[in-house]
Image (cartoon, rainbow, N blue to C red; front, side, top):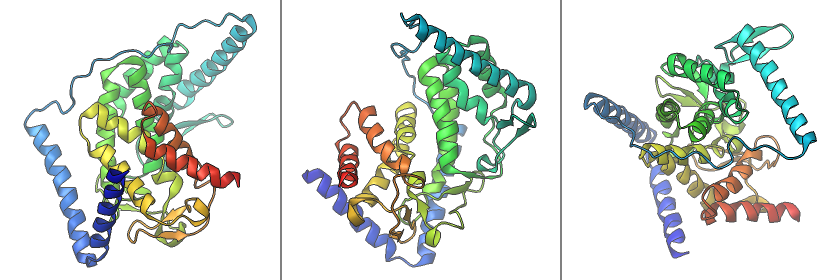
Length: 327
């Protein structure tokens, strides 16, 4: 408890010091942080360092090969697999390499949420293909990722959407299959998302140009704020990026989000949907466990479970909010 209190007090002091700076000083600090990240990346590349530590891969128990005894369950499972194959075959036929398929017009489409990054359906489906033992389809998807998945684009992306679809999809595929390409691609993309956290508080921007590192928030968001369900839905993936890369920076970024949230007053015990990344104050006191807030609460509980139930901070934040909802 004393350690947690000390961490909170230190975070509060750091935030106060940051907010007392002039705008020019804040912009200078952000530029310096960005330049340091670029220099570190260049240094690793020039030194020929592999960047990623070796990992002993162990396939999770029960990932594949579990046959249900109930014939009705087997029949239903086969029907679901048939539907998945139908969807995949038509995506491959009409929209291969694009982000999604419009099923009525039979045309491919690439949402601007991902900028110029392509292949969202392929990456998002990797774990499903593997679990369903659709080996041929998984192989062709893996080959596409290896040869075509490119993050070197000059485009603005949604940090939240790219994290849950691409980073999450790649991490899941790696943990199921052990294919090294997925780990490398996940860490590469994670590094490109780091400049989103270059704000006075460390609360990330919603939108980021992954080439320039310039971020901003949705123009419709209250007072230029970041959205709870977006910046609060990075924790699982970023903790695993640190684990798989050996670089603590990813976990540090999302743990700082918690520190910022924990020092703020919570109206009625819940977290408002909008938080200004510059001032560190709530944009407004609109609260929701549906849209704009939902997955933040979901990730608190999942973080506790993912940590083998050692993340007591995530557990407390979740249960405190649940108790308020009950009343």
